[in-house]
Image (tube, rainbow, N blue to C red):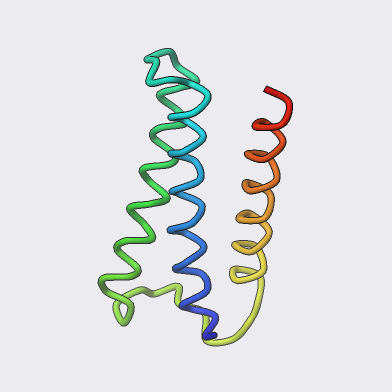
Length: 90
């Protein structure tokens, strides 16, 4: 898989996870924490959709595996771990 495609899929996956976490644990509330969670999830998902729609116009497309690709992998793994931990504890 190309690093640019991996980063794009990471944005999409992280945005969906954050939105799922908002829906599961905040229950569509409107306090500041819930609105922040919703805003971050929508922003990351929108960035992934823009990267998916216009891949050649993205200035930060990594040509090789580096900090952006590994950071996106770490972010995705961390969000997955946190979501599963919340499901188990709560």
